[in-house]
Image 1: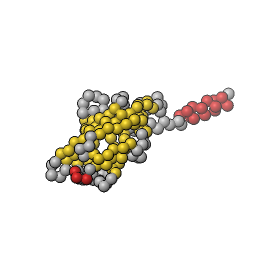
Image 2: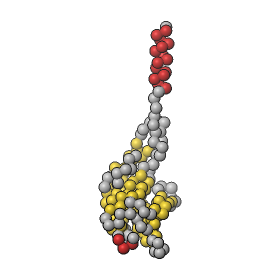
Image 3: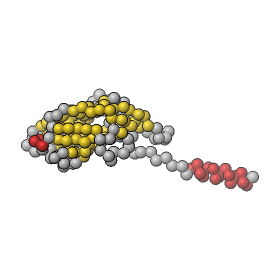
Length: 159
């Protein structure tokens, strides 16, 4: 009888020790790394996007003097459209549009964690008003945003 109670108590204590570490954020981000002669943004960069709710929202606000930046991806859209707005010190404005086509893979951690969607980038299209080139560096988008997913080159004359 004593062994049975000890066995049950041990089982309860071991079950109580399990810990589930859910990510703090259930949204994944892509990282854009500057390449070429422009190593840091000299102009202010604001990025707008419609991430699935029908309303454009600011996803990056007035970034300046950065060599990389992160943008979120939508959960369900097969393509995300980002609107880049540049403003230099004299007030001159410039605009570009980036369309990222992707596949969405639901990712399950635990019933205790929020739903997460990982992505595989299929292609990218962009206008070339201020952007010289944009290439895919890492097509897999998950919790790890440290490797750059895109290498972006801006034209010199707008900096």
